[in-house]
Image (cartoon, rainbow, N blue to C red; front, side, top):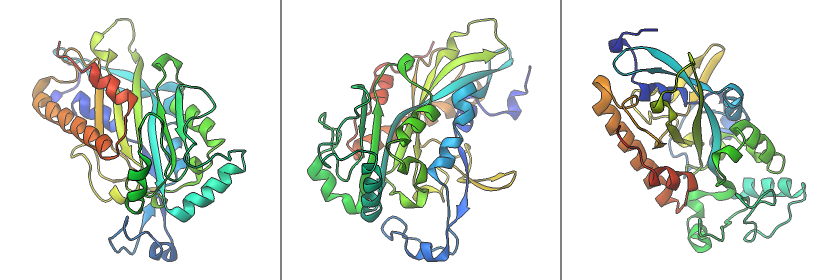
Length: 320
C-alpha cells in the first residue's frame, strides 16, 4: 500500500494517536458539581463530564487480545504496513479524597485486607509485583516518603492504590487481564470516576510489538517499544496535552467521549529511521524530547521510581 506522504501523519504521530484511549463520557449532576473539591477543580462550570475507570479499561480490552494496530510507512519506498502492539500496565497511582479513600479502604478490607496503613507495602501475589492501597502508604524501597506525603495530602489527595511492574516483559499479562485481577481485591479500580481523582493520579502503559501485516519479513526498526503516560484525573480534560495528537474531547458514534493522549513518553530500541524520518523528523524529534522531559519531571515531582522508565532510558534509543 502506497500513501501520499503529504497527506498522512508521521509514524510517531500515528502511534501516539493509536495509543490514546477514547472513553465514553457521562455528565455529572448539578448537586455533585457543587461538591467537587475546589482545590482540584477551581473553575466554575455548568456542565462537567467524566468517565469511569471501568470504561477506561474497556478501551484496552481488544488491544489486550489482538494488539493495537499502528499504520507505519517505511522510509524511502512509501509502503505502509500495520504494526500491532500489546499494552501492559507498567505503573499506576490513584489519589482520592479522604472520605472516599476511607470508604474504599473499608470495602477493600471486606476482601480480607486488614493491613496497617503504613505497612501495606507489597502484594502477596508475587515478590515482583509492588502494590499498595492505603492513605499515606510508602514502599520500603523509598518510592514514597511518609512524612512528605502527609504534608502534601491536601494537594495530592490520599493514596488509594499504586502498582509498579518490575517483572520481565515475557512474564507479564496484558493490561486488561492485569486490571481484572487487581480489581478483585481493589474494587475502586472499576468503580472510581475521573472526578473522584486528584490531579496527581496517573498511569503508564508499556507497548510491546507482536507482529505486523503484511508479514513475511523482519524489519529491525519495528522492534521499538514504547512507554506512554496518561492522566486519570478530570482536571486536565479541558486542555490539549499534545498538539496534533487530538483534543481532550472527541465524538463517538453514540455520543461524546474523553480522550487521554499521552502526556509523557519513553522509547526502547528506537533504531533506524522509521520513527524519525521524512519531512516531520525534526518535529518528531522535538516531540520525543518534550514528552520524555515531561515524563521525567512528573516522576521526580511525585518522588516515584518507575522501573520501566529507568530501564527504557538506560537503553536510550539510537539512530541507525
